[in-house]
Image (cartoon, rainbow, N blue to C red; front, top):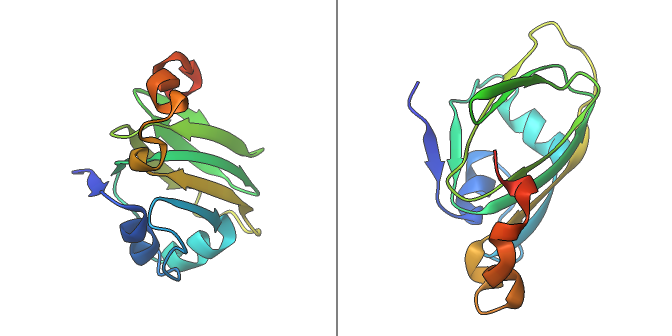
Length: 127
């Protein structure tokens, strides 16, 4: 399946039927709202053009991050850099209430800062 590219944080909000972000370059999203929006719509692999830091609980299924597949039955915390591919395959029989948070940061938000210059040193954004 061809990956879906999400270029902006606003596009992420539109895709998951969320209210528009309060700032176009940074957003904190309640994962429970994302889950309810995509419940009946399986998603293709995603490629985002922003950073994403996620903490999620109450999930079941598999997550393909890079070339590795992981289960996240006990929850997951993951870090995505722009242009990385993420694919999630939820378990069809899982009942529960997924929860957590997603922090989305567009690279332009960091532009000109020392953090932007040193982002490559943070290995948790690599797969």
